[in-house]
Length: 308
Image (tube, one colour):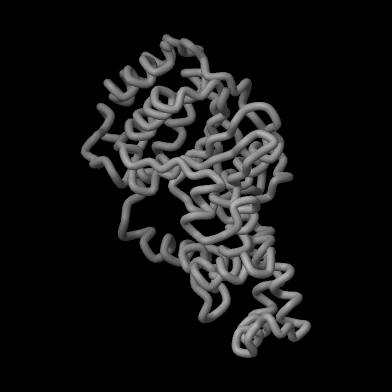
C-alpha cells in the first residue's frame, strides 16, 4: 500500500521544457505541459503502482511568511519574471487549468493549502500518514528532508534527470550521498541545506560552507541548533575561523531553518478521496477534454494505466 505525493509544478515544468510547444490544441494553444504531465502520471501509476495518489499544488509559490523571515527568498525569480514579461510569452500558465480539469475528470485527487507551497502540502500529508508507505515524486532536492524510516516509511522518487533515470532515495541513500546520519537523514538534510544555502531560492547560506562541510558539521553536532549553540559558546570543538563564520551569519541562521523546513502543519484542503481509481470518474468529460485540447495518446496512456 503506497501513497504517491506528486510535486505537480515540478513535474509539469519539466514536461513543459522537455516537449516542444509545437504540440498544440486545434485553437493553437500549446499543450506540451499537459501531455507531458499526463504521460508522467501514467508512468507513475504503471511503474510504482500506488494505491493512493495526490497531485499537490502551489497555492502560493512564494509564501509571505517566508518572505517576512527572509526577504531575498525567491526574490530574483520575481525580478526575472518582471524583466521577461514583455519579451517571453507565457505559454505554460494557460495549461495549468487544463491539467486540473483532466485530473478531476479522471478522478485523481489534488491538494493545496492557502498561503503555502506544494512542498508544504507534501510535508503535511507525509507527516500525518501513519499507515501506507509514502513516495514523494519530485525534481526538487528540497524534499529530501522528508525521507524517514517510519512510522510509515517515506522516500523520494527523484526525477531531476527524467523519469527514465528516476532515483529512489530513502534515508540510507540520502545518508550515503550527503554524508549525514542515516537515523536522522531527513531532518539532517534540512539543516545542511539551511547551512549551505541555495542561490536558486535566494538563500545565501553561510559564506564558505558548502555541501561537504555542512554535512560534516551537522553530523558532528547532531543538529543546526546544537552547532549554533557551540559557535556562540566558544566550543573548542569548532575552529575559531568556523566560529567566526557562523556568528557572522547569525541573523541569517536565526530564520533560515523556518524558511527551509516544510510547514508540516499547513492547512491542507483535498479535492476528494485519494484512492487511485480503476476507471475514470467522468469518461465523457475525459473524452471531451482529449478532443478539445488534442491530448490524443497521452490521455489513452493515462486511462490504460488506471485499468490495472
